[in-house]
Structure formats: C-alpha cells, structure tokens
Image (cartoon, rainbow, N blue to C red; front, top):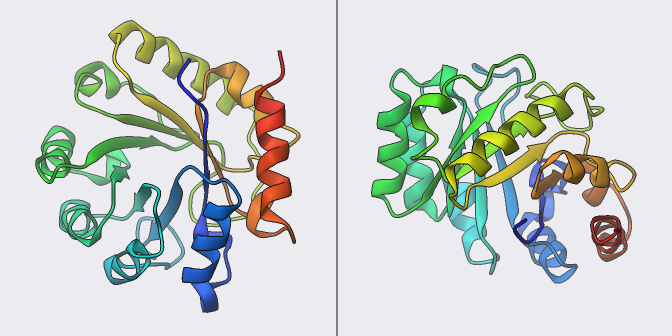
Length: 221
C-alpha cells in the first residue's frame, strides 16, 4: 500500500482568508490541497475558477488536487493545468471523449484522474485505466460540503482497489465525502490511500489535532 495522503478540501475553508487557510492546513500536516470546482450546471453550486487556483499556488508547497465538477470539461481542465494544478480529475459522464480529456491533461505535464459518483459504475475504467493516475470515489453526491458518508461507497472502493492492483501501476485511490476521524480507517481498509476531508478539518479549531487523529487511525494495525 502506498503512503496515505490527507487532502483537506478548501470548499470548507474561510473564503475570506484562503491563502492563510491553505498555509495553516499545510503547516498542520496536509499532504495535498483539494480544490473543488463546481459550475452550477453539472452540480447545483458555484465555487472557484482558475484565477483562484493561480492565486493560491504561491501559498501551497504541496500538490494542488483539482476536482472538476463541470460540464463541458476540456477548456477548464486546460485552464486549471495552466493555473498551477498538479492533478486534475473529472467525471467521465461530463466529457464527450474521456480518453482525449485524459490526454489533454497529461500533455500539460499534469496527472489526470476520473471521478465516480455514488450511482456511477466503474465500467469506463475497463477502457482507460492504463492512462489514469488517480481514481476518485465520491462517497456523497457532488455539489455540497458537509454531507454524510454513503456506506455503499465502500463496495465501490473495494472494486476500484482490485482494478488498480491488477494493473501493477501506481494509481492513487482517493475518496471524497463525509471522511472523518471515526470512519477514515474503514475507508482505508476498503482500499483507499488518499482522503479528502472538508468540514471535518476546516470546521475544527485546531487543524493539526484533527489531521494527527486521522493519521493515528490510519496507523492502527
């Protein structure tokens, strides 16, 4: 199993002081910064554009992990690559040509991922898993922070882990939605190695305490 990574989602940060929030959560032990992009079209909310990513790039010494909840995908995927993202993931049903979108991201020297909603099957991985760098399983329905973990996601995580292991490639398996100290170990046991947490971290007074508690759970035998 690869090293675990914790990726706080700035969707739950204080928008009035995002640069400071990013620096603080990295100092508290974050491995990645998760950047949720919503377009009020593919999902019912509106969040950040590429200029915000570009502005935050100088505040982050860790990878910026961009999750595109947008349709269409390609133009914004390219814009976020150029704005400083390190990883760009998108929903396959939002792209007309999934393989082409993956190529577009990787041609910019970035890692490319696919995101699967709770009711979206993993079938497309049969065709493109040799190209992806990351698989992101949504354990809530996309569009809003602060939702509760959907337990059926555990079965999908287990299946995704089997598909990834069969390739022999170093593909990250990320989970986003309702991740907390009291369930992160179950999610890891299902096969995840990267964990997005929003309100569980940014909603607390001490980021380091929460991240350390998550790592303690992940370190359990």
